[in-house]
Image (cartoon, helix red, strand yellow):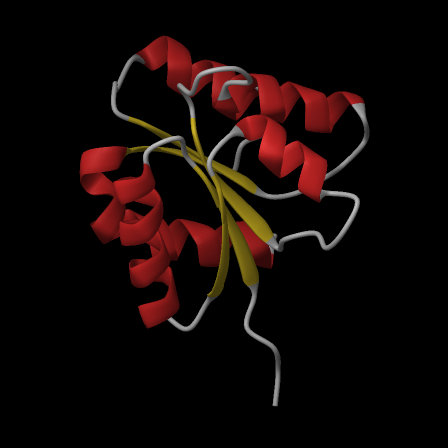
Length: 122
């Protein structure tokens, strides 16, 4: 029996974290959640997720900040950025910094699991 991929969900909104946890677990994925970019960064000394689903705009370290920190420290994880605002600049920045996908939150239910599986596959 193979282990389900571990997905880290990083979002400052508790309702979003709960909803995404339910969606991903219903799709057969394991989920760990973090309320901030810093909490996620601090967790990396322990286990590493197979993929990170992260809000772009959060207080403190934003999703873009976390993405850049991971790049600078040589930690390579598939990252899917979520945003409530579909601005081309955000999408270009995230994808240019190596994100596997940049999704608008209102479209998550239709596209998130597909994006996660594609990101994990490489």
